[in-house]
Amino acid sequence: MKARDKRIATQLAYKIIKEVSRTIRPYVGKEESGVTVKIGADGTPTSLIDVIAEDTLINILKRAPIYSYVISEEIGEIKIGRGTVNSIVLSEELQREDLGDDEKASFIFLIDPIDGTTNAIREIPAYAISIAVADVSYGRLSTLDDVELAFISNLANGSFFEAEKGKGCLLRNKEIRPSDVVDIRRMTLGGFIKTNTLSASKLVDTARRMRVLGSVVLELSYVASGKYDAFLDLRGSRIIDIAASKLIIEEAGAVITDEKGETLSTRLSISEKTVVVAANNMVLHSKIIDILKSG
Image (cartoon, rainbow, N blue to C red; front, side):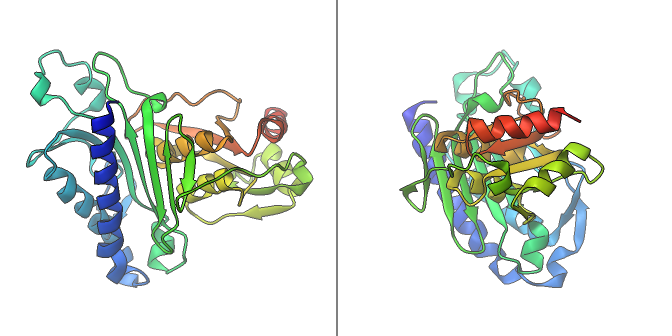
C-alpha cells in the first residue's frame, strides 16, 4: 500500500472511531438500543445501536475523496466514496478488467462497528470498534495476508490499539508485548469454547483462569498486550472480527492460527469464518494445539 493511501486510511479510521464513539454514547445502557431492526448482511440480527454505528461510518466514507471497498457486518460488501455507495461482491470486483485508474479503490476496510453489542446495551465496559485496512491487488482475491493497518478501540474506556505491518503494535501510543507464560497451568485463557469438545474442556480445566468477556476483537488484543495468555474461538470467528486483531497480535510478537496450527490466510469476504487459536508465544501455542489435536 502506498504511503499516501496509508495516511488517508489512518485519518479516516481515526475519524470513524471518534464519531462512532460520540454517536452511540446516548444509546449505551438503554434497553431500546437492543431492539432488532433488521438482519445484517452476515445473517445475524442487527440492533438499533449497531445501525447507528454503521450509518456513522458509512456517512464518513461516502464523503471521502477516494473510493474504498468496505466489508461490514450490517451492510455487507460495498464500494464507497466520492458521494456514492454501491453494493458489490468483492471477489468479483477484484477480478474486473474494465476499471480505469480513477475508478479503482485505494484500499479495503474491514469494519465491525460494535463488537460486543450486548455489552454496550447492558453497559458492560467491553465493547469495541475494529477497523482493518487491506491493500487492493486487482486480478486476485485479497486475504488476511493483505491487511496492513489495524485499529481497535474499546468504546467503553477509550483504550486504543493500533498496528502497522512490520512496525509493531501500540496501546495508548506505547509499544506492547505479550506475556512470557509457557505453563498451561499458569495460563489465563479467554474464549468461546464448545462445551462438548473434550480437548477444549481439558484446556479450561487445566488453565489457571478462564475469561469470557463477549468481545472477540478485544480479547484477541488482550493476548497482544499480556492481559490474556491465550484466546480460542472454536465456533469460528468472522473475518471482520479478527482482521485487525490478527495484525495486532502478530505485530506484538504473539501467535495466531487455526485449530490445526495453520496460518490464517482466509480470503476477505462477509461470509468467511475461521476457528482462531491465539497465544502469547510459540511454546504455549504449541501445547494448546497439541491438546486440541488430541481430540
